[in-house]
Amino acid sequence: QKEVEQDPGPLSVPEGAIVSLNCTYSNSAFQYFMWYRQYSRKGPELLMYTYSSGNKEDGRFTAQVDKSSKYISLFIRDSQPSDSATYLCAMSRPPSNTGKLIFGQGTTLQVKP
Amino acid sequence: GAGVSQTPSNKVTEKGKYVELRCDPISGHTALYWYRQSLGQGPEFLIYFQGTGAADDSGLPNDRFFAVRPEGSVSTLKIQRTERGDSAVYLCASSLATGGISGANVLTFGAGSRLTVL
Image (cartoon, rainbow over all chains, first blue to last red):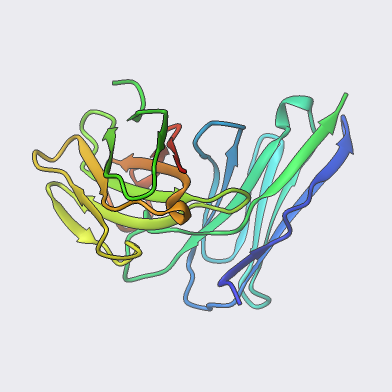
C-alpha cells in the first residue's frame, strides 16, 4: 500500500463548477501538506502549502487538512479551462526537510468551456 | 537564471548505455533535489543536496544511479548501464533553504528531462 493515495481520475467538469480533489495517507508523522499543479510537459508548481491541520484559502483555492482522518483536500471554486492540469498532493515529515516530499499519483482535471 | 533549467529536455538511449542529465538551479538556491516521475505517477524522491554534499540519497534505486554537485550550483545525475525501467521524466528542483515553515522552502521544479531507454 502506498503512503499517499490519490484517485487518478480523470475528472471532467464544466466551467464554473466547484472541484474537490482529495488524498488520503497512512503515516501520521506527516506534518507538511502541499498541492502542486502540473501542466503537460512541465514541472510541478506549488499551489498551496499547509502545516499541520486546518484550512488555508488563496483566491479560488482552498486547502483543508484533517489529520485525525489522514485526509487532505483541495477545492477550486469557479473553475476555469486554464485549471485543466494534473493536481498532485504532496507531504513530508520531520526530521527530514520539507523538500523531501512524498507525492500522490496525481489527479487529472479537465474543465470544459 | 529565472528558473530551474534542465538539459537535455529529451534523451533517447539504448539499453546498457551511460546517460548524464544536467540541472542548473535558480541562482542562490542552496538546496537541490532530484525526483523521478514515471508515466501516470507522482514524482519520487531520489536525492537531495545541501551545498556540495549529498545530504540524503536514500531514494536512489541502486548503485547505477549517482549524482554530483561539485561547486554547489549545477548538478548532474548519472545513470550507468541504463535499463528500460529507467525510462521516466527526471525532475530537478531547488529551494533557498531547508527545514521549518517558510516561503524559502518552496521547491521550484524544472520542466524535466524525459529519458527513454530502448
